[in-house]
Amino acid sequence: MESFPFLFDVTAQSADYNRSFYKTLLVRDRLRGKMKFKKTLLTAGALVATLFTVSTVTADTNVQKVIDETYVQPEYVLGYSLDDSQKEQTLQLLGYNASSDSKPLKTMTPDVYSKIMNVANDPSLQLYSSVKIKKLGNKKPLQVKIVTPQNITKVTEDMYRNAAVTLGVQHAEITVAAPIPVTGESALAGIYYSLEENGASVPQENKDLAQEELAALSNINAENQGKEGYDADKLNVALTDIKTAVANAKKNNSNLTEADVRKIVEETLKNYGLSSSVTADQINLIINFALNLSNSGVITNSDFTKTLTDLKNSIVSKAGNTFNNINLNFDANGLLEDGGNFFSNIWNAIVNFFKGLLGQ
Image (tube, rainbow, N blue to C red; front, side, top):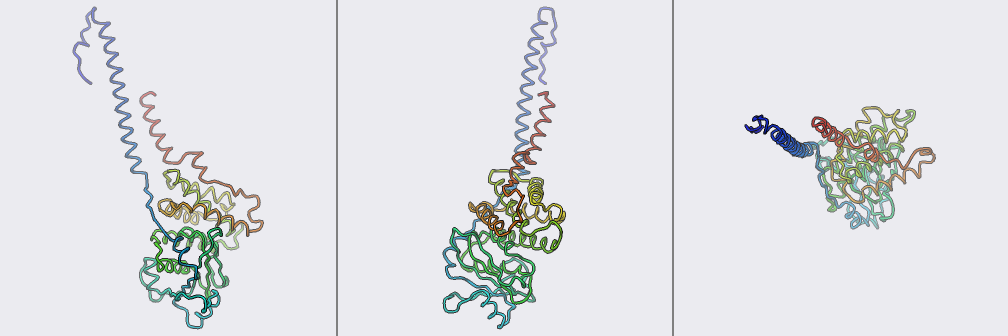
């Protein structure tokens, strides 16, 4: 504090003046202190915002544009491990017509798979799943048909659809087949391969997210088959809601933390009656995926949430009575808006703490 010697001159004549002036200085210093505090608070706020804000990487993709322009004629990607007889059988299952399907057939080899998936090349890799991709009118929802459901043992049609939306596909007709029992997970890699060969820009993060989603969904589904309270349709619809909530939250400039994402996931699963059947580890798989999704550019696509809504409506419409007495308008993002997100709560607590110190 500055030193003012005359303040301590307490003669009878100057005492009142000094007391008045001293009060003025105290008020001034207190105001200065508040101003310094506010500056410190703003600086701290900037620092905290820098530490806690996770930037969203833009992942531009022209996937749908390439599909619309290039896939009027369907494209076929066959698994490398198929022998000649199995190739012929698989092409027949996929609806191949040699006289009208003029595009060259593609083959998913272990080398191609390693490059597409950014993993080590494993020559012993067995690749049987095969896929056909064709343009679909933009007013029709994304369609996936598994023509050999008895042989695709781990992935359902709606799991493929969910993952394809994450990849950037809005509307297309995708057909999957395998001549022998396989998990079906490599079929998604065949879609990446075809798209990139035709000029589509498929960011690695899109591929990683789609594979992570497919693995999470297929593993959860496999582990819960026959379990009371579990339903694959409900899980797929719940995931469309989770992805929509994450996308909308980021669109509203919300800084999603792990606590926020966990709340979205857990409350959405609860809405669909899955809380008792899905384990804590399985919930964490979904949370990890949703967190990665929230920090990606996949959700910046303007049609992302619309495509998810179309997918959700399509699943519900063919599920019979499965969704009776379930709130299909449940908005997990609204939970954050009602309760405030975790970041905001921390910030408000900091502000209120320091205000309390100043007696405000």
